[in-house]
Length: 465
Image 1 (cartoon, rainbow, N blue to C red):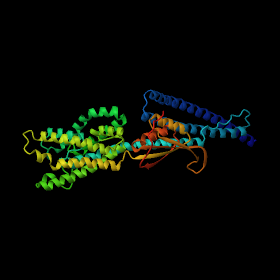
Image 2: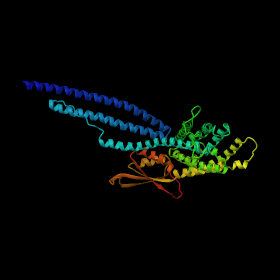
Image 3: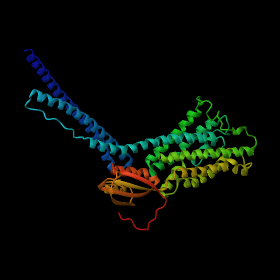
Image 4: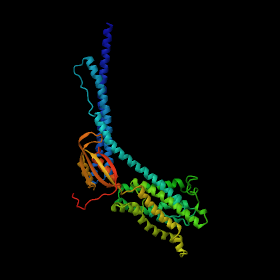
């Protein structure tokens, strides 16, 4: 009798558990459907944005949207897989109870439609896209770092030695000195601040030129650099009642030597060359970070980069030519501004140490830029893919036609494969980032290998579309 009561009690508990499990399954299914509906609506919004881009193509925006969409798809599959696995776990308990209770109309167990192999494949595709996203974030770090380096070069080396910075910055410095003449320790901080103000104002026409002729991303990145450089100057040296960081601001701190304390002109001239050399090297390094981050220092460098890209010439060489011409003009302006009275000693002023040091700054900046970041060094890409025609078509749409294709019998794991191909293309280093995006947009599973190519030769011929 006692055993019978215990059996009935256990059966009631099992039946109650059975109903609770069915309730949990329905609740989990309902939550999964609600999640799918929400994600579907969000994905539709992203797809509509991609559809709008087809009318006004922008590869950078397309890449970001597709990356966002793929990341969301991957996350959605993971969450749905968790829901399904949870339901399957409930189903296993349900099947055990159905067998135990002898239920005739059994509920069939669900099976996950997202297996481990599919999720692993999604992870590999997403890994390639995430790599590019990380490189874009690194680009912003390079812009901030370049802003700090160029601020140090200008405030601590070029300004104390009265050496004009390269390009349009020289014009900004002349205007700053005109408002705060003559330049000395008491007003050097104000003159430096006004330099940044005039530099940005003078850049407005060239910013418009760069936006139209060079590219939006390039222009925006350059503006970010300009803002960072101005912000670093204000933080370090101050503005108004804020006098900057004590001890290390450019008014209190002098690198090795305060040039104003040197009476002997020959010794002072040597220090001017030394300061100019250090400032030039720092500027060159800062400019390289800018080029890596797809930006430039602004000013005449907008024009320099446009000429460099269209003529396929190293930007350092173009900068030396253009900035030398600008420097000659601004040095004459500097003489007129500093001496409104008739020229007392034109030759001495015009061919002084700061004049030749300014030449040195331009040349050293150009050389350092070319050495650290040789933008037009040839690079050959070996693209391993199972969709070669899609990649070739996408490359041709973006103007890259010099590609070669052949079939390979083995993949990277030395395993035999029937559908692997290698697409080879030779490009300039400056084009690598854009070509890489183009390839991974066409085939997210493609593998890209790059190697330096010193020279390329070809017979002249007409390119057929």
